[in-house]
Image (cartoon, rainbow, N blue to C red; front, side):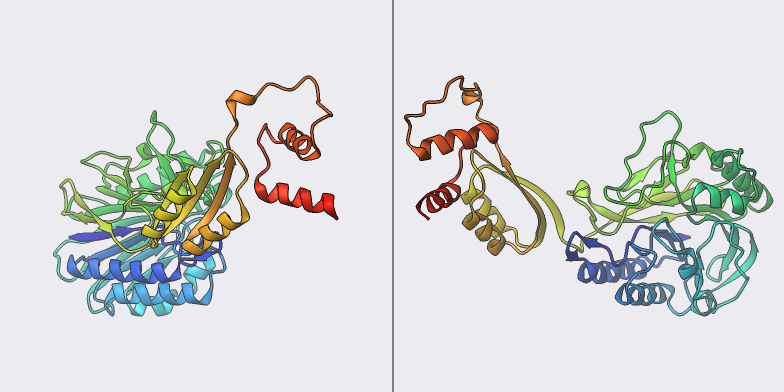
Length: 401
């Protein structure tokens, strides 16, 4: 059985003032093509389907069109759970219509899915936080424990635990009960969740830059050791870089986002994960790199000419540009930079400190001309940096007015 695991689509997300919708259309098409080429039996989308609780019309339309094509008119099940960026009620709302197309949308943790049948598969058994499917082309079922995102209070509410019970313990106990009740070695057993999960004793994984954080202190930290032994593969969402925090035998995988969404992700390769699973055996998986979308690049220059050359040679990028100089960036240089490249997200001018002229002057020579005195004053107020020609011209204009 082949399972395509993807997550963190963040449809509708912008990069500062730049829309990413064109790139998202392209990468959704790429994911559909991979699913078809690989002939996957099931698609799991592990949360953060949208970037906000109230996504725009274009983002919603792209999501529904994509999952409908992935489902192949009910021949292939698609299971999508809500993440911390998603409105659970928005995800749940179209569920009756979605089921007719073979799509299972899960907005809340511990949700109970109504059994149904399509041309390609049957949901044979469900419980709160659990579904079992029988895909027609296989003679064994797949069981999926599912936990959509919710904050600590809401998770405890759904799991029926008292406030003093630790979230980690509550989830572990809930998963254990489901696994013991339904997950034997005569079927494939999977867990999917949108949570901040880490292995005990390992460094904490950095959450995505600029994203809504899940982990507040350690209150929302879930340990991978809480996953039941019966589970063969855990499909996670939230961390935007591909990472297996489990073992080769029992992978616990963040599949990555389909695009680089912040400059902290600059240079990352994005993936979907193709999982190969049979009952009672270790799974294997293959990362398939996604090629669509502009690259995000952090560049630093000390020379305007070199900067302009690089920008001219790399037009299909989003750039965080740092310019280091001994004086302030001239207006004409700033204009030339933006005219050369349309994807400059941040322009960071850095005035470098002149280490050879750091001593404060003890005396002021009042016999100097006024322009020299202004330059000395300017340097005293700006970390010993001299005014550029634009500032000096403005000063001269004021003097002559």
